[in-house]
Image (tube, rainbow, N blue to C red; front, side, top):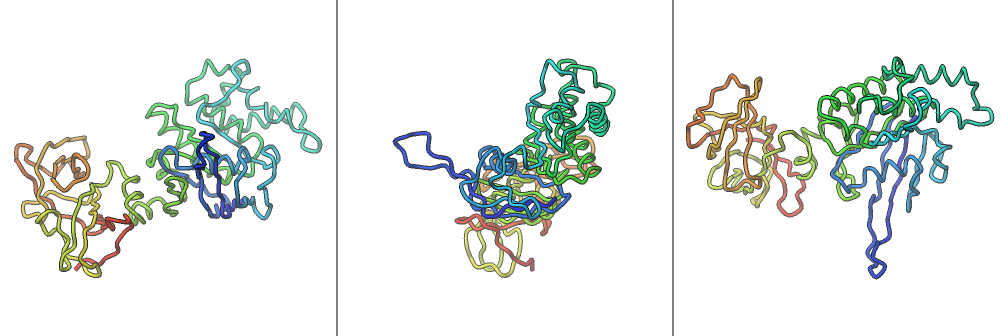
Length: 367
């Protein structure tokens, strides 16, 4: 089931009755979610991603714009008639019910031609539980389950209705790191097995990039970029997207372009064409700088952190916007941790320029 958002806007009135300032939570969002794809809505708190999800679900009504499920206009349709499955971050399980009863609960409210017999409900509940691998826990209460198991119950409860669209609102936020990794892999497996069009809301870029077919990066209600995760990472549209994606984050420094060369401080670090002389922000991915004795970019060395397979070379530079500059290298490469400075060579495809006023990406060719 494809989902089409057409010029979707949501405006909340000001909480201060004396103020006329309205809050634009989502602004003119247009996008087609392809049938059977998992789309990640990604951005910091307050960017409008959950509001978008709630409008798709019908829990919130758009100020303007349209929502289509396939060719059906569902903008004015009530939540229960949209055929959606919704999973919240806090599980929202009934504590007095068993796992089986929690999963069956949505089926008990079906009426008319959709009404099921008790055996049909039991069969559906077991199928959903088996899909999320909790079929051996059907007689337990939520208090007897781990956080990850409770989240699986919530997912099974959403799937048991055989929804047209599955909506996940930060479903991994309450889990520890190991469980988050395990559960996100399960969500991806379940989505692939069922083929249900899925919208996954998160502020964690690693989660979004690891399981999404497409990511939508949002900031203050405005879509910044849409694309495949790796494409957005490799080709960010602006400084916000470049900074939001990546762990460790991208190194950002003040620089300038003079006569076809990019300078950081007084060091010419890259020769480029197609860029006029101007002040810029320079972005370099941590994996895009490599220590080299004759490197073009010199920094003050702070520390070398060896992390098994990789090592993180931590240095500083007066032009950097962040406290440190990180280079992620193989632990096989030896760096003298006692040295005062470190020189780097820069990989051109990991090197970005941004307009200092607009923060939009500047395209260039390396000479």
